[in-house]
Amino acid sequence: MLKEKLKNYHIILASGSPRRQQFFKDLDIDFDIQLKEVDEIYPHKLKGSEITDYLADLKSKAFTNLSENDILITSDTIVWLENKALGKPKDTQDAFNMLRALSGKKHEVITSISIKNKHFQKIINDTTFVTFKEISDEEINYYIKNYSPLDKAGAYGIQEWIGFIAISNIEGSYFNVVGLPVHKLYEELMKL
Image (cartoon, rainbow, N blue to C red; front, side):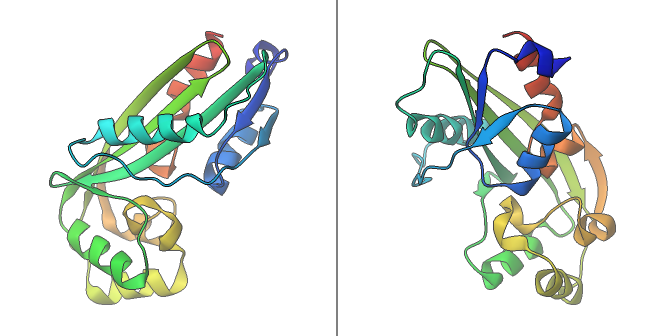
């Protein structure tokens, strides 16, 4: 259905995330992956979805030569905990500190998506509330040693071991926490 709708467009996914790429495959969308280096720096006054909206837009600005039938999709995800953004950890100690901070608390996972072509741009976002049970240092260290927290906002993947053992409640889109609010993206692409 969506594939038919998009048949006259060239979809560009500007994301190195294997999870986002898999979502596009699962939606049966024909797409190309194009990556451009962007310094993901945002004004410190921004809060919550303002940050992810800003970064999704910033990533889209790296693509300056879109053709008539190009549709560029960029996105950004953060974990928002106690009025502070947690992006991807810098190293294993940073990952440990993030997971320790999340332990026993509720946080928000916020993802923004920019859908852009030569003549228009729309930025949408979604928020999911996730609650972690108390987790031990041993559990955190086991996760860091055996999985890949460094490429994930907030240092965790809900679809991995830590998600199985630590998440006690989720309100909103599960797929948003994995990295893309697929239902919202689908709605917007169906409007093209």
